[in-house]
Structures are given as structure tokens and as C-alpha cells.
Image (cartoon, rainbow over all chains, first blue to last red; front, side, top):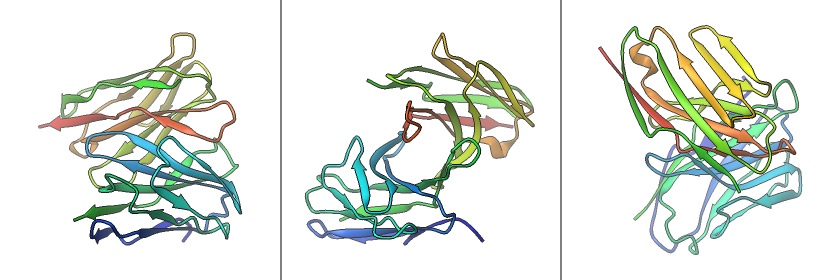
Length: 113
Length: 110
């Protein structure tokens, strides 16, 4: 089946540790996105990538890093510099067909203890 | 700048009709999206408007007025499973990015 996968669903880390969240898609989409969602709020863009080996900062990139070495994969690293990392992280991808809608993965809930 | 406003919460009765409004002031516009998000899950795509007017899709309809910077999502024959957050998002001119509103949490009561 085609889709976007994120793992793990729940992740716990100690303060001060870096952690990498995975995002994989087999939809052959060029563009991929990372969002952060805090309780009761909308989505805020962290980073996005329109093509392999290229990515741009979103509205809240500080304390995060990404890579795009393969079309299918867009991992997000939450570094120790991120002051409040506990949140729900959503990955999305977008194709060029139809309305160019962004489709979301199931999300990773990160809790920093 | 980007500014997208939605009511924070709404309550409606099963079987009724509810309208969720979204107003936007953005530096560019290339379409408006509505997503549904159940608690703890990913947003799922509901509708897309780029031209003025009403788009109907089953029990859900979405309306856009570009001159007024206004959209609404209309849900008919409400069901308990419609209890969720509804997110309004505007796409930028280049078509690359979405800016989301804070979402409207809809509670459907029996």
C-alpha cells in the first residue's frame, strides 16, 4: 500500500539528548514537510524539502535539523537546543497531481522527561 | 504576514447542521484547504477551494470568498464520529507551503 509512515508512534527521551524521528513515503512525492503541533493548537512548519538534497527552514526551525538524502526519506532530528521539544510531530508529503494536497503520516508523540 | 482565524470550539447536536468559519489575511493565496483531525491522529484532507463558490462533497461542503478572505466548512446531518478538530489552511502563491489556523474543536452531542 502507498502511504507515509512515521516511527515510533510514541517516543520518550531524557532532557539534553538528541532524538531523530523517521518519515518514509512510497508515494513518489517530491515535497516533504515536518510540522509540530502543541495541545489544542494548529500545525506549525519546522522544515520542508521540495527535492532531494535540498531543504528550507519553516517558521520554527530553531533547535531542529533535517536531511533529504533520498526521495523517500526525510528524517527530523530534535536537538538539545530545542527548549521545549515535547509535542506531536507530523510529517507530510505532496505530489504534483490534482490539487497538490499535502497528505500526513500518523505522527510521533515525543515526550522529553 | 500570515493570519488565519477560526473559532476555538463549537458544540452541535447529532443530526443538525454546523458551519465552521475561517478568515484569513495572508501575503499570498493559492488555495484553501480543510482538514479533519481526530484526537491523537493525523489530519485527513476534506476539501479544497481555489475559486469563489461552494464545493460539495457528500455531507461536507466548503465555501470560499477570496475578496472577503473568508471560507466556511458546512457539515450536514451531524454524526457522533464528526467530533474532531477542523483545520483551515491557506497555500502560498508558489504552492509549496500551507499556513494553518489554530483549528476548531467540534463536539457533537446526542
